[in-house]
Image (cartoon, rainbow, N blue to C red):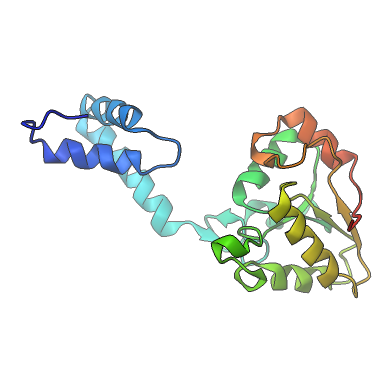
Length: 205
């Protein structure tokens, strides 16, 4: 990337920082760094400040696990949402993807991952207990399992289904418009919207 005699440690450090982001190779990282180097200092300072403020000031909704700037996220605070339906997702990315479809108007529950023994992630590492607590409320009538359809997502869905077995709540899953092993984040909005709209009762095969 850099000639051995080139000794700009500052540029190298900036490239290393950008390259540490997911999906960013060193060539792209260098392009980002050189782009910022050409920008006015106040603009770059604002860019850096926004990232620092995001990391330091954003919190997580105590109700659903979504990010928020205040005590509760805008979705949980929106009285127009149907609070009798909870859509269970793996991460914040899936919330954003589903919201972009405009087809869902209930609440969410962000697990923070899926059960993955290979990665050392068990049920206690996820917000499953909080989900069971929310589903136990009298106003909850349906829980939609909208996890990825790979082995880990299916395992997590089945575990949640078993935990909800003693609660008077319907458990459904998104329709199979999303193929096995697909991540919801990368599913087009039309397919994802139809998969939620045409959801079916969860079938623990």
